[in-house]
Length: 74
Image (cartoon, rainbow, N blue to C red; front, side, top):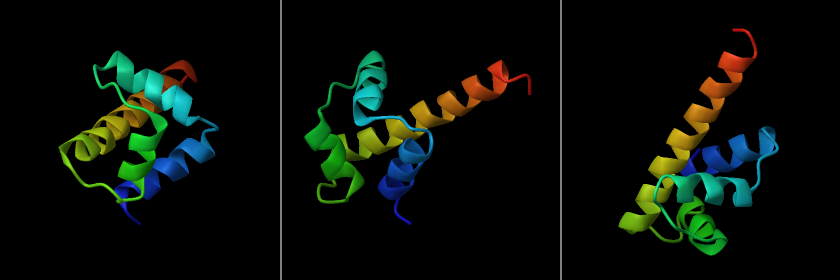
């Protein structure tokens, strides 16, 4: 599975929206919209911004997992 597909799957499994992800990316200094995210995740655009969207999205979801584990008593 492609990285963008894995991110989409994780968002779906955790019931997280693109709007939530956009907010998290904005907080990290990456201002993007739904179209840019969609193009990056479906590999329809593979420029530097798309690569950064994927990398930062992975970090956001990693931090999300860590936050859940920390607050779940694990």
